[in-house]
Each structure stands twice: as structure tokens, then as C-alpha cells.
Length: 505
Image (cartoon, rainbow, N blue to C red):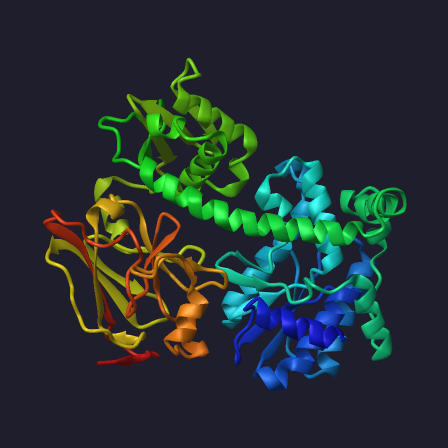
């Protein structure tokens, strides 16, 4: 039953393609042992390669070492390669203002990302279950989270440029243990899972049982339903917020100041009056998207930060600058909100210019130089971008046939950051002429793009929206408008050198 549930999740949620190399996070506990067992059982039919990954935090002394030995032994018995690591330094959570749980989680995901990149794994799999989902929703509710937090643990996420999948998200913990007992598989019990000093343990062993006994015996199902509803609402609201955000963007304020004693660069700008005219919920989402698009890390975009920027847009603050932390600032210059990022590039203007001509992939995202040529690492492709007259009108070609060309509207682009990245499950696009959004996965299926090609195709993304899939049509709103004498001209073509490509004309 558990294997069938996982198979259904993999297929319905589009978590996995055939032929992938998966890094499987195994702590030695019941959930992760079951995850490894199920993926091992599915491996022949799905043509999967599995590598086991275990991070020995060393927080429980000999017990931690015994967990690592258990995982090594399990991998050896099943004929699977295993990587066991330790954090690069001791977890000093209090010095970073983190709980021990959060610090351990951050170290674990960083280890998965490093290992997956080194071994060239297509993704990493973690063993989060349906019970973890219920606990997470309650924890986030207690912290005052919004729709994103109440959506809980996503089926698919990213960390350090690596895709993270969660095949057990629809499986109950009791079904995991039943599965292991039926197959005679052992696992390790972590004594810290019963320690009430950890907040999640109090939710698991105290709050959830209390709610089941006193309020709703099906509280877990109610929380799962809440998360599913909030995830759907979030996707829809994000689409609406994207349109509002596009309507509020504007060019940089002339002469925007960076602040005293620190060299900074302007990153983005919004029309303050247009932001202030939006409903409150839309304002918050537009501000959050603006901060994210400008490069502010998620940890700094809390509720209070968004509210301060909202007050700045509405003119409710005497000061015209908001400190966001880490050197980031939001300032109001006339009728514009300007986001200022600290200049971390050493050296003078010549050195900064030289570095800007050699963009590097960050979390799997490659900045596209406009104008200029951008090489896509590992794809043997390059993107040529220029601003020039005319509109490309090529006859339709199969996706993956190079070169591929497109003309995009300069009004839609507005000189914002343009990037190329791989497809991620859940990606949606509004193809020109289709009158609505559609999953990119469905577009690939319609165009008969082979599964092993899909993550090698570069998507052209701007402001969080997919503007163009090379070889396919551009997105709604990105077409060159009547009266535009020039356009953003993009071409994706095969770069010289050795390596795998798809096909070329």
C-alpha cells in the first residue's frame, strides 16, 4: 500500500522523471529507511540511480556515530553508494540567533546540496511525511505565518540550486512503521525525538494529541486540507500579484543615493503611488515579490519588514529610508521606491565591469547579459542578447532545435534582471494566444519533449515570470507592442566545445 501511495504521489505531483540519479537523505530513522526502501523497490521500473547521504551532526556523541554506522551498513547491504559527512563547523545556533533545530536543518540541506552537485545528482529526496506536514502547519500557524507558511512543506523545493523532492508527503508515520515491520527492516530511534525541549516534539506529543482528544479526532486531515487549500490559493494569488507587480514597476530614480559610508547599487524601483493604491493584501505581496526579485534573502523579508516598506510607499514614515538588514535598504526618492543593495564586488569600476561580463550560476540561475553573450554551464549552449529593430517571425520548430530566436517587448522587460534556469515541477507559463496559464510540464508533454531533455532546456525568466521557452512561443504580455521600434532580441544556439546537446538545425 505504501509503495502504491508513493508511486501515485510521484506521478500526480510530477516529482520524478525516469532515469534520474537521486541523492536520498537517510538519517537512520523509520521515515528515511522507508523512503530508501521504497525508492530502491521502484528503481528498476523508473531506471533510477540511488546514492545514500547521511550527515552526522555529532550532537548525541556515540549515538550519532552509531546512526552513521547503521546507515553505512544499510547502504552496503543494499549495494548502494553512501556519503557520510559532518558539518563544516560545530553548530553554534545561539551565536547565529537560530534554534538548534533550525541550525541542524540548515546544515543538513547545505550538505545535501554540496553532495548532490558534486555527484551530479538530478535531485535530493527527503523523508517528510503527512504527519510532518500537519506539525509544520501548526507550528507556522503559531508563528503567525501567511499563506506560504500555512501551505506547509511543499512536495518540491530547492536548496542551493538542487531540487528537493518529498515522495512520502502523502504517507502517515504509522503506515511507515507498518511497512518496515512487514518487510522486517530495522531502523534507529532518535531519543531526542521525545525531548520536550524541542518545539516540534511538543507539537507532536502534546498539542496534536490534545487537539485530537478535545476538539477534532481528524485534526490531521483538517490541517492537510488547510495546507492544500492555502497552497492553491497562494498559487492563484501569486499570479494576480505578479500582474500587479508588473504594473507597479518603473525605472530607477535618477540620482538615488545609497547611504552613508557604504558603496551601494540601485537594484530595482516601484511606483510608490501605484503600490499605495493597491488593496492591502496585494500591497504586501507586491512588496515581498519586489524584495525577492531584487535579491533580498527570504530570512530578511518578514512581516515587520514588509509593513515598514508599505508605510514608506504610503508616505506614513518621516524617514525616507528603511533598513532591511545586511546592508540592504529601501528608500523613497520622489514617487519611487528604490531598493539598494550593498556593493560586494571588490575593486574599481573596471573590475566590476569585467566580472559582470562573466556571470556565474547562483542556485542554478544564470544571469543573462543584455547586450552580450552568456554561456550556460553544462548545457553547451549560449544566449545572445541584443536590442535592435524588427520582430523574429520564424516558422515553428520542435523544442530543443537550435538556434531558437525570439523578440521580446522592451516595455515588458524594463531592463530588469533576466535569467536562464532549468524547469522546475510546478512551473507555470501564460503562453501567448492561449488565454490563460498552463503548467510547463504539460507544454513539454504536448510538444513531446523527452523527459531527459526537460531539465536541460533553459527557461528565460524575468521578475519571477517565464518570458520565453526557447523553441516555443513567448509568454502573454511579452509580445512586441505596436509602435515599439526596437525589441529585446534573444537567440539560443549551440556553443563551441565538447558536451551533450539536444539537436540543431
